[in-house]
Structures are given as C-alpha cells and as structure tokens.
Amino acid sequence: MGAVTVSPACYILPLVNYSRRDLNLLFPAAVVAMNAATKAAAQNTPLMSNTYKFEDLAVHPSGPNRSRPILQGETHTGLPIELHMTELAPGQAPHPPHRHVHEEMIMIHEGTLEVTIAGRIATLGPGSSAFVASNDHHGWRNVGTTRALYFVLALGRDNA
Picture 1 (tube, rainbow, N blue to C red):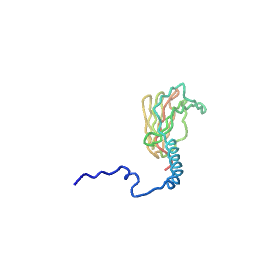
Picture 2 (cartoon, helix red, strand yellow):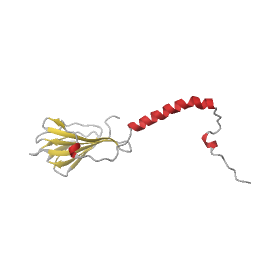
Picture 3 (cartoon, one colour):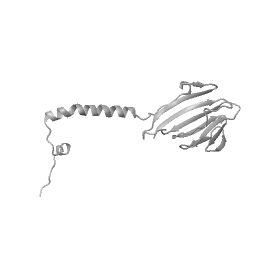
Picture 4 (cartoon, rainbow, N blue to C red):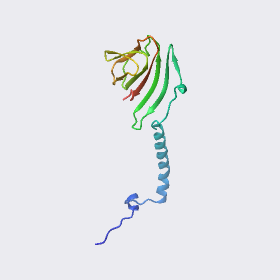
C-alpha cells in the first residue's frame, strides 16, 4: 500500500466551503478583532529594560518630605510593580499605619527607620530591608536625627 499525502490546505479550512462573498463578509469582523487584540496587547505591554538617573527623577514635595517616582507598570507575567524613593525628615512618617492587598518591600539607603509590621517593631538602618505581606498592618517613621532615604517596591494590585 502506498503512502498517502495530505494537502496542507485541508488543515486550514477543513470540511468547509467558503465563497468569496462569505470571506468578504467576514473580513471587516476580522479586522475589528485584530485591532482590538492589538490595542489590548499595547495596554498590557510589560516594562522594558531601562536605567533611571537620580537627577532625572521628578521630585514630589510633601511638607518636609520628598518622594521620587521611579517606575510603574507590569512585568512580563503581568505582575504590577511600582518603585519609588522617599526622603523622610527626622521624626516624620510618610502616612499613618495602614494595610493593603499588594505586597511591599522597603530598602533603606540612609538614616534610621522604626518599622512596625503586624505589631512587631524593628529599628532598621542603611542596607536593611523589610517585607510587608498582603493585608499586614504596617507603618514606619524616621527615628534618626538626619533625613532617611529609602526605596519602596510595591508588588501586585489592591483590587481582586
């Protein structure tokens, strides 16, 4: 018995006969669907590799404190990510203690922060970090005599 060859065309349009009129009717719907898919993909474009010079970061003053947004977007897996830097004056807190759904990490570059997470208090200096899990009540304040400079990395969304 000889080998059977199958035309690739049978995989494209199996068991269906399309007329040119049918294809002309389907074409506008296909264009609309492709445009919608392209628009959705553009809105969910992951962050691209980049560098961020300190002197180029916008400064947002808040009383004696300052913050600098660095990046905000999504990773290639769709995980929302936001990074900012805060300069906190002695005795100051960025905001009252609170909780939220997204996870958060702080990394201290200069100064001394008293960090409270779920009732546990730690005093952290340069090079130290803290991780805040989802919905843990947390806050921090500068307990040093100089400005504290730290980074906040937020991971995830607050809506379900």
